[in-house]
Length: 320
Image 1 (cartoon, rainbow, N blue to C red):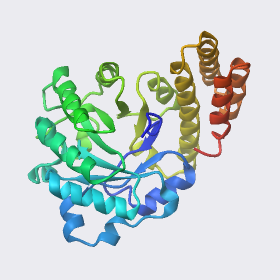
Image 2 (image 1 turned 120 degrees about the vertical axis):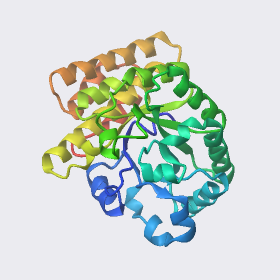
Image 3 (image 1 turned 135 degrees about the vertical axis):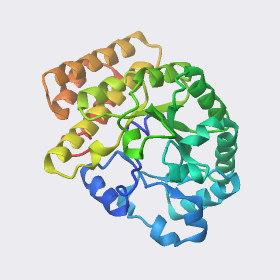
Image 4 (image 1 turned 60 degrees about the vertical axis):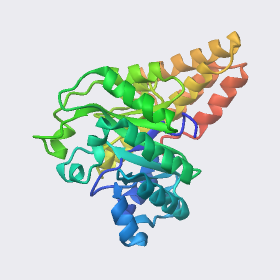
């Protein structure tokens, strides 16, 4: 898994991202990474596998999100996911609902990083696809950065390929799941700091994103952005907006990769000029194809600039 795999993701959402919703979203966005609703290990080990796991091949790239805290059960379910053809297995360490807490999984697992590490290692040993973790930045009133830093450090050492970080604390008592998505304040700076301290770990940010400009800005600090409810509004205006957000995010990520690669000053300078062209285009509300043309002109004469141009050529305003 590369750090560009999570440039734009659609969040796992209970009662939303079933196979029908995901197929609908794929019609809008051919490139964004999609996630299933959270599926518990018990549901897979003792339930109807086809009902829970079947999907249309058009949904790729597609991740299976699991809920559980038993390493052996999670490993068994990860194997099932791979057998069904999923591209990634994701562990839910972010859901704050009391029902999930009763099962000893979800956000409450952040208080047990060693157990989460055991779960991740068991899944990594069981399957060849990437194993990732979705989590919060803290629990209840604990706003200590060291808490989430130590969590990521422990779990990444166990082999987690990527972390999708909801930039809010999880309140385990007193708030509903809906209120947990709205009331705890967003603290994007915490996720940015995680990326600075773990530069070799893929980190995507989640929480409160809607406008293309804010998504593009985040890609200067992290490897990707995950959209939640904003992506699930099923009207034409939202669909057009989602197309534009994805196309711009992919172009911007290509430019960031160009900027970070290679020590050649000419290559780096050219990529930086291309990046500036994207920002100027956004300020003028230009479309992705116009952004690509401007960036290609800025990167003329550079092999990396040509590569970036190819990346953006596929990011038409009509496709994500």
